[in-house]
Amino acid sequence: MVKKLNSKKISLFLPSLRGGGAERVMVNLARGFAEQGLKVDLVLAKAEGPYLSQVPSGVRVVDLRASRVLASLPGLVRYLRRERPAALLSAMDHANIVAIWACKIAGVSCRLVVSIHTTLSLATGNDSNLRSKFMPRFIRWFYPWADAVVAVSQG
Image (cartoon, rainbow, N blue to C red; front, side, top):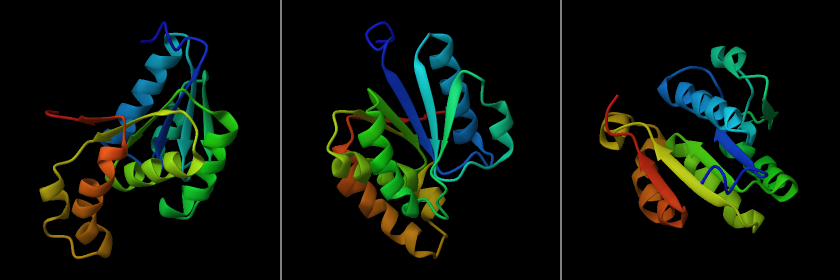
């Protein structure tokens, strides 16, 4: 697949790089794609966090300057329409939902791969905020719109 995408752009979408396993994995993926000769954009709802300094020089950071992940939706739609990446990879449930919506609204041809880095029942089970209450339904309703779903099974 890398050879097929060589002249194209891969975009990775996250809320920020504030720290955690998913953020580290996405920075490592960005590095690996760039080392394979792909054009890589790391699209962040807000460009902040300790992993920002670990983004390799061959990876462009796109800051949507949003106060929250949901607020990044219009910026992500504009980005997708302007840049037209061959693929968009996202991580973290709320960012995945925004990425799915953005791809649908943008109406561009872009392969969307969402990844799950948590056990949803553990992540939302004891949480009383509104997002956690609705996330299982949103996942059930909207994840089928993605081209692929990658679930981390261990580690």
